[in-house]
Image (cartoon, rainbow, N blue to C red; front, side):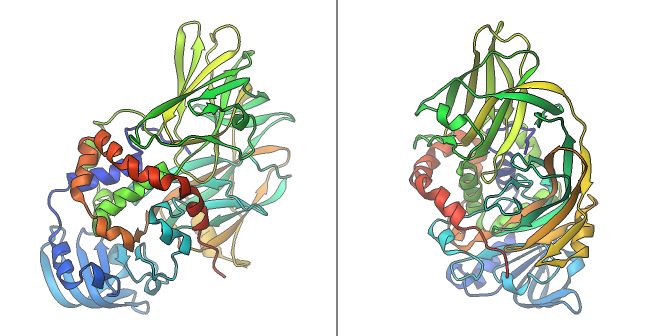
Length: 514
């Protein structure tokens, strides 16, 4: 998964913070709603907020979903786009007019064809026990994909696409897949407290010769041969060579320093001297630092998050203008090699996602210095997990063959509606909710092929009831106006949670529905 715009903070996190910090006034309806349902009552009182396509908002406290008439009906208030009240009483809101439905009674709306922002708490039937121990370590951030028989995800789709306006096409190497020609299947799951809106899923098959592998570079796909492991690797926390020798799940990582989440670190490596056109293979994923920061931003937004998401989708230009003022590489792993001209940048890995390892290739210059290849990897401390680094000889460019899904099954039963939605990138999206699982069947072409998974869509992260008490617009503003002090202020909190976050993250996966 590639992110093309490096920033001081991960792009999706920054956009959310910028939305909150650049908003003109706090919406008037929030204060009115708080008078009716304070923080304690909110846990028990069923409510729904219908964010309308015209920018308006309907807040209902006594309500029900009427699927027969395709509407949500109940008692409450209708606000226009400027948040002035225009109607009070028993209201009917058509499904077609709702862009986003926000509620703390998710079970009552999941059967309706609506985009849902859930607000879930300790008594929810969908939240897991592990997640309750640390709500900012809950499993998430996109659809996960599994090979048949595998317990670990082989890919995660569109991790940075946290709203409709950030919808993106994601490309993931299925590096461990080596199937024969013919039938091939993946399982797509929603294992998080999220609503996934998937526009298309397809495979790209890259034909190759025996002994070759195919890798993605910023310029396209290339075939490579002769992967060579590093000769040495040193990091601040010691010898990193054993973890980088093979794609085996034994990853190198480090801890944040407890004082500054923006602290950086450098790994120094030696590899065999390249012969001919060569590239550097990197197999990486994120730690949970990105996840923690994203969830912290949502917690500071609290029950305003739905409104900020709608501002983003309405095309508010202020976040983009503010985003352009940022520079730096919090979310990038910068790669340098020693050449005859000195140390030169050859690119960066900008993987977003803590779930599946991504594999990519950075092309090396022709004038590397004599002797073993000298490489530096520089990134945010405690942000990266690195499984493999290798030198590869590039043989040729490769053109992909696109393969559409041939069949989609849910619980063993064909789902033609899901099939139609996943075969075309037309804006008609498949909605999946926590616990949903679909098996996607493909047919591979003759001959050996490297496989890449292409997915397009976006997702809506649900709010945790435990976050609502953390609402703090001032801290959001501080994060945007001056990220450095806020990243220092958050460092001790993350440092305390850091040792146990990985275990909680994986234990809190939502199991498939039965």
